Amino acid sequence: NAIFADTLLYLLKKRGALTTEEIHPLIQTIHPDICDDSIDRVIDGQHFGKKWKHLVRDAQQTLKKKGKILLKNNKWYLTGV
Image 1 (cartoon, helix red, strand yellow):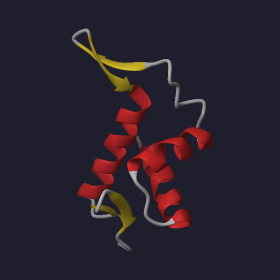
Image 2 (cartoon, helix red, strand yellow; image 1 turned 30 degrees about the vertical axis):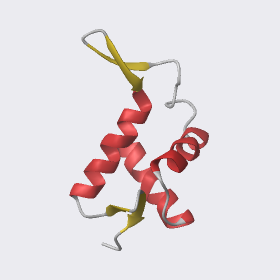
Image 3 (cartoon, helix red, strand yellow; image 1 turned 180 degrees about the vertical axis):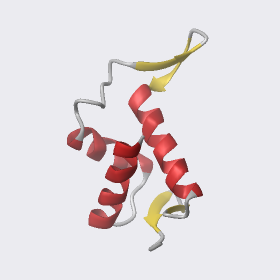
Image 4 (cartoon, helix red, strand yellow; image 1 turned 90 degrees about the vertical axis):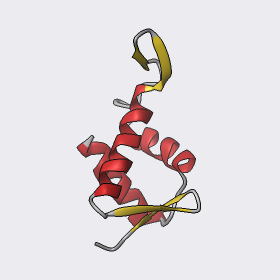
């Protein structure tokens, strides 16, 4: 989660506001070793998408709760904190 959080902050600083859909391929390019599309998030036998994308989402929510990023009009922004 810390790796994804650091990468999110880096990407938003470098590229400006991004949607989650724009963020995913950028993170996958930077960290292909931990962004394995063959591993699904499975809970009680139900598939909920790619595990690494859920970890990115967790990182987004953690950074949002800490006040470091915010979501506005479907785009993630740095807050400057």
